Length: 226
Image (cartoon, rainbow, N blue to C red; front, side, top):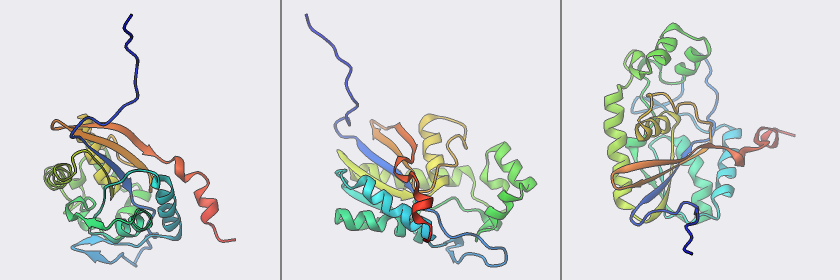
C-alpha cells in the first residue's frame, strides 16, 4: 500500500530564503545628545551588548549555507553583520533602501524618549498604526515602495539561495505584515539580534519564523563587565 508521509519543509525550486536579522542593540539615547545623522536618520553604533549579540548571531548561523549577506546604509547593521561575514568569508552588500523607517522630527534618538514618556503622538501612532503620525515621518506608501523594490531585487538576484539581511525592526515588521496581509504594526517590536525567516517564490512570500532569539539566552549577563 502506498503511503504519504508528512515531511519537513524544503525550499521550493527557484525560491529565495531570506533570514531577516534585526541589528544588535545600539547605544542608549541621551536627551540633549542626539545620534549622528546619515541622510537625516539616526546612526548610533552598537552598544557593548549589541556587539555581544552580533557574535551570537555569527555563532548561530555559522553552519548555514549562506550565499550573501546584506546590510543597510546605517552603521549598526554593518557592525552586526561583520562577525558573520568574517566567519563565512563573505563580502557585505549594502542595500540602502532597506534602511529603517524615517522618523521625521523624532530622529536622532528622540523617538525612544517619546516612547518612554508615552507621548500622545506616540500613542496615536500605535492606535492608527501609521508612522507618519509623527511630524515629518515616512508614510506607509513611501516605506512600501522602497522596501518592496529592495526586497524584489534580492529575490531576483538569489534564486535557489539562502540570504541574510541585517536590517531594522520597523522594516522587518513591515515586510512580515505585507507578506501575511496583517495589520501594519502586527509584527513590530522584534528583539534586537533576533532572526525572522521568509521564503519567496512564485511572487509570494511565506513566513516561516518570527523573532527567533534562542541564541540570545543569558546574553545580558554574559556581556556584563566582571
